[in-house]
Image 1: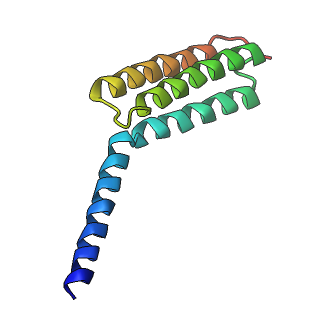
Image 2: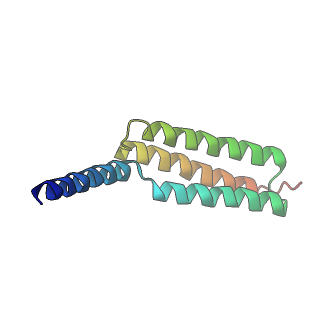
Length: 107
C-alpha cells in the first residue's frame, strides 16, 4: 500500500513538472496572431489586393517571426522580453500587410 502511494505521488510530481515546462514555452496568443496574418495574406492574394511579390515578402517576414519564436523556445522558457519582441515584430508585420493590401496595386 505504502509503495503504491509513493509511486502515485512520484507520477503526479512528474506530471506537474512536465506541465510547468510546457506552460513556459506556450505562446497561444502569438500562434493565433500568426494564423490570422497567414489568412490575411491568403485573402489578399485571392482578392488581388496583394501581388505575388508583395505576398512573397510578407510570407518571408512571417517565416522570420516563426524562426524567432523557435529560437525563443529553444532554451525551454519564453521570457517576457522575448514575447514582447515577437509581438512587436508581429505588429510591424500586421501594419505591413495592411499597407500592402491598401496600396492600390492589383495583380
